[in-house]
Length: 288
Image 1 (cartoon, rainbow, N blue to C red):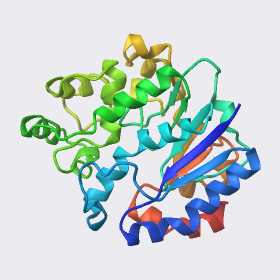
Image 2: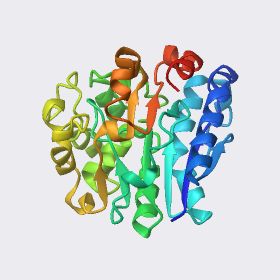
Image 3: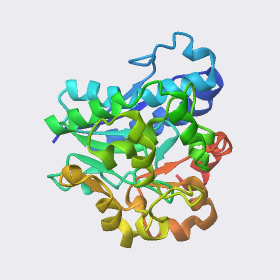
Image 4: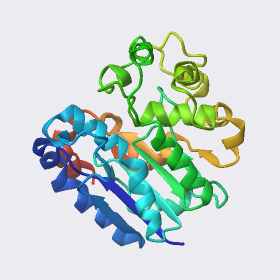
């Protein structure tokens, strides 16, 4: 079984310079220990029609989100059986936890979520199959300009995922991933909002149909219910993992320290806030 790991590390210098000293070294070390190949994409495979993307943080963020599916597909061209994508602001925390431990052998897509979404887009594993390729191509099709009407619908959802992440009338990768999981295909943008609300779990979303307390894979007992929100035609192909089997927020480990690390051992830790990113070096010194 050939396993590849990839990430994207490009954008404005201040962003890249914060992550570069830690990301590549950590990722390469983990992959070398476990016999995986690693690719860090330092240039986008598509610029989303934004030739000046590198001059603006918001545009760089849009381009970064749009390059996840193409990056995994590019890895498939090299013949990998499975590819794990991970954001550049995630580090491998336990070199003894292997990616194989998450693979059941028959699923094509492996995702996990948090208290906001059934699936997060910061990391996922995809099998190199016709279905895996089709799924990635459909996910990428959601990366497009949308009408002002649909855009404003999403702005009405009071969740930080949208207030901070929608730019140039586009949704970022994570809501698009969840819309695809709920619909099973590429649907007209007029259907996006209601479809998203059928799978979104954030308490600040007054239109959501389910609660994180019952359907978030952040809780082990909710994994099956989270899986039930995926479109029936996808359910046999998609494996929803308990969140802490795959990743955890850095602040959780900071708050619980060795007590946490002696219990659940996730593969990855996520430094998602600007403050978290700047403290990567300190975190490595304390916990890695």
